[in-house]
Length: 106
Image (cartoon, rainbow, N blue to C red; front, side, top):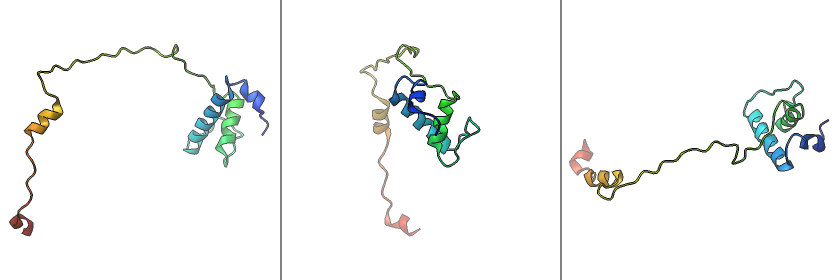
């Protein structure tokens, strides 16, 4: 392997992020994703993932809370007058009858 850890660490902010990126890409390759490089190792998806990162075919970036777009969440209030759907279904349902001996013989 020509890639050194020091050269790979320049591609990611830290070694944990690098190892997660390599593991994630190796899993994709193992599950059938085609490699992005020509000199891949068909028997070792980890080496292929490392080579892809070293040749800048894969960019590693970390999402921070600031980089995600805030989503608006609406909270619905449930009034006390109306029962929940589950309790309405439970009240309206009838228990299943056990088959009688005559029905079993048929």
